[in-house]
Amino acid sequence: MREEREELSDPLTNVLGDLAPADRDHALTLLRACKAIELEPGVPCFPNAFPADALLLVDDGFVVLRASVGGAVRSAVTGEAGPGNVLLAPARTEVLIGLGRSRVKVIDATARAELLTVPALADALVQQLALALRQKQEALANFAPAHHVDRVRGKLLQLAASYGHVVRDGVRIDFPVSHALLAEMIGSSRETVTRAVAQLERASFIDRRGSTYRLLVSPQSVRV
Image (tube, rainbow, N blue to C red; front, side, top):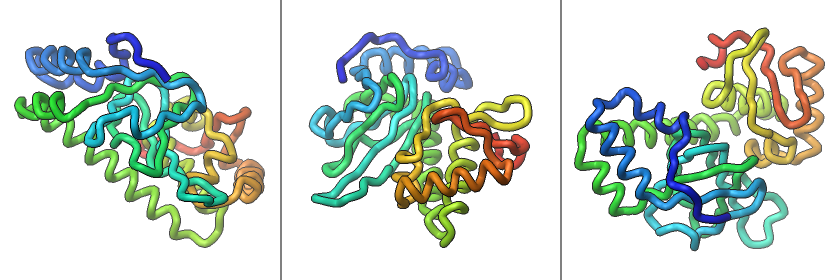
């Protein structure tokens, strides 16, 4: 982990594209002034790296929050976000991890207060927080199915809807999703997820290449 350059990625500046030019320029000025943290793939970033009340705006890559309590055998993914998405800084039992090289902007209390003084910026921030809350609700609902293959299918559909790209014959999830990560996302074991993924491949629901997936479904079915 290291503090890095102030430039913003195209996906993040595109998030601000619907704002009026003056509001957009104001937001870019504020975000450029926020500390940027580069995350090396798989290297945890601990809570003490962030102000307690900070919001994190993903500028590049893909990040997850991973929680582990005491001597628990398994850890769990408690949140995930891609470019332009907002999530809370890690809580006491969590760490922030980039899947591949990633960068986040740290919006502290001062920057957040300034953003909220402009109605259009406040609305954009609320929309991102609402999206994060909806994704958490969908993730919790995915624990309801008793069969793990249904949990894996549901989580892949959720990831495709939030972060997928439409390609020929389906929707592609570009960032790496290992069996171990899927297991942490759905509260299962890696071995169980491996069996479930194999079943979904046989059913022609997914086409897997290493840790990336192409869902063999119509874009309409995942609301991309």
